[in-house]
Structure formats: structure tokens, C-alpha cells
Image 1 (cartoon, rainbow, N blue to C red):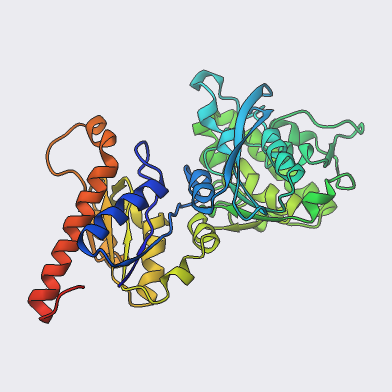
Image 2 (spheres, one colour):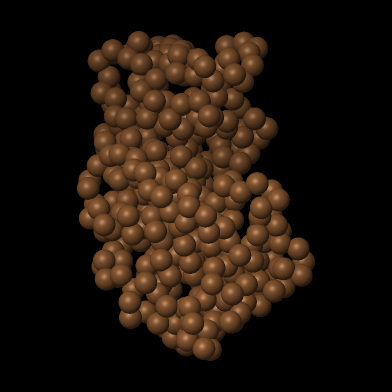
Length: 386
């Protein structure tokens, strides 16, 4: 019997790989001779770096970069075990969580540190990049990132633009001649799970600016700057970023990744599942076990367990989920390929208590789920699992 184990991290408790190992422990208590394939997954957001690095036998590397407000910042990027793919979460270089609420400044915040993290990976020989762009503090359309990689963004006097989205209003010309050649030769997959355009009432500034500290006046100013930026990009680079779905993600970084680096915007979970080669692991599988910290109505929106279930369902493979808790609307997942879901807590306990025991609780819940399945096979089919 072959069982594929593909959970994502239980946030704040265990990594995706440790969750997978715990699930395997529970499986082997019931089916000791099962072939168990561990395929930890993520959805492109928080935790993707660790998941892909751990699952591939890679390493998390430290780097000092420029933070969102221009100050030095200790950050990290991931070197996957293939020696070719680097994983970077822009939230670790230019993220909103790096700032105190009173520090938020979308007019000035920069993605320069993201470009520096890319440079670190280029220096280390990596030429394939997975960039997670959620959680940004910026509204500069990736201008800072581009500048870090050698792109010249010039005003009417031939001077380089300063940091921040507001400065884009002064953009006169874009010079790509000094863009790092190694970046030109690299592949950039961008985890982007929104379809917002760059500008307008559904654009980067209007939809996401307020959560980054933008007042209505700032939103108008930033949107106008991005509209001007889009026009110059179309003229000088030949990319109509205002027509790209997802260009407004992360303060316009989605559009900047396409325009400056030829990035491909895709759902984060699809990038991850292809990177870990889930489809090949599913070949010949009899069961898939996935899971996450809390399964609820939000799970159906491109979360990793749904991505796993969709691929398994296409092959007719049953899927069960072992989760930290089951929240409101969790039964919605049954229509999306997860046949059954179980919570790991056997009784009342605090979140801290559950977090301390997560691995043991996951193993026990998996064991019970498999025992139920074995009983069902016996009762309804007249046969037992090995």
C-alpha cells in the first residue's frame, strides 16, 4: 500500500516536514509495511521557504539587506537542495511585519532589499528563483528591486530616483543596460495569488495601500505615480504592465517582476506542487494524507491542502486531512477533494498545550483515522488492509 503524505506547516507549531514525519509515524502504527512518501508542501506564502528548503535537503542562508525604510536588515533566503533554485520571501526583506504600525510609510518604502537578496543568490550560483510576494510594506512596483539589480530609473535631470512609490511620479526614463546579466539569464517564478491590476479602483494603491498606512490622499498620489510608471515602462521596456492580471500584487511588485525580470506570475500552491513534483509521487498511490494548522472556509482559496486534493482527485485517489483544528465552514473542503478531515486535539486544551504536543497529537490522530479506515474496509468490503 502506497500513501503520500503532503501536509503544509502547522503555523506556530511544526514545520511541514515535521508534520509529514508525524503523520508517517501514525500510519506505520496501523500499516507497518506501507510505502510512505513524504512530500511537504506550502501555498507560496509564509513558511514556503522552510518547506521547500527542508524538503529538498537545502539550507537557509543569512543575508544583510536594505530594509523597507532603508535601514540594514538581517534577512534570510533559501537555497534548495538542487543547487539551482533559490527561494525568497519578500516579506523577509520588504515586509509589513518588519515595521511597527507607526513606521508604515508606503510613499517611501522600498523593495531594494529584495533585489539584494536576489543578488546574494546569484552570487551563490542560483539561476532559478521562486519569489513569494505576500505581506509587502511597499508600493513601489518593484522599482527598488530593479535598482538593486542594476536598472537605472532616471528623472528628467538624469539622476537616479530615490526609494519609494511616490518617487515614481518623477520617472522620466528607464535604462536596462546595466541590469545584472545573471538576472537576465535566470528564471523567476512569482507566487501571486491575487489578480489586482496595477492601477485604478482595484489596483495596488487603492486596495492594499490603506493597510500599509496610506491615507486617501496618499492612495491618490501613489496611484497616479504608478500610472505614470506604467506609461514609461510601456515606452522604454515594451511591457504594458497595466494590462497584466496580478500586476498590482505587493504594491505593484507583481508588475515589476514581469517588466524587469520576465517573471511569471502564478498561484503559489501550483509553483510549490510542481517544484516538489507531487504528481510523480501520486503515481500508484492508494491514499493521500494532507493537513494544516486550521482547516476552515478559507482553506478552499488556493491553500496547499486543496491543491494537493485537486491533483489526487484527478487520479481517483482518496484524500484525508489531519489538522490542528476544524473551524467554521471546514466542510466546504469535501467538495474540493478532501474526503474527510480530523482535528488532532483529543479533548479541551490550550493553544500552547496543543502546540507543545503537536507532533504526538498528529501521529495519534493519523493512527485513529487509519484505524477507522481499516474498520470501514472490513465492514463494507469484507476485506482488511494489510
